Image (cartoon, rainbow, N blue to C red; front, side, top):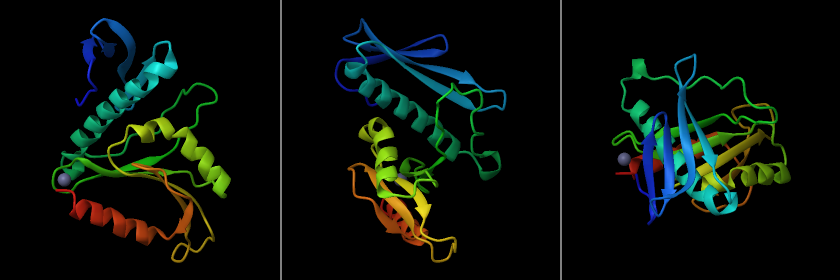
Length: 190
Ligand SMILES: [Zn+2]
């Protein structure tokens, strides 16, 4: 893992505990399996949350990316997307997302988050805010895709907002243009 100075991670049972200066426990990532055979990472942040949440998010992101890279290395027939989680706490929102591993080295080159129901600039900005912490620790580009401007797939442009590495402005874009960009990121990755 690529950790900031002074931060260390130790495995304790089914959890990875995060420490500052070796003894100050600032959070943990609990690993569990789901009945459907997926791996679930559950981050916990110790108080003061404002001080600790960024580092916990960074460790959680690196662990989940490592799992996704591991999946990307498997042959096609052993690869599948995770099932949507069930038994979520009330008020939890789930956003479908897709990561794009490099076709040469399997490292993640980009991520798309889908929020098909977001139909205005304001709604897109609200979703962008929800992903602020995740975006701040991402070392690859991330976009949020919102609602289309019509229901004809071949010409429909979608609301689009880049949130990492830098936050952009909401604009309309046809998925073909996003695909071209993803192919270019893959071509230029390594
Ligand atoms: Zn690569």
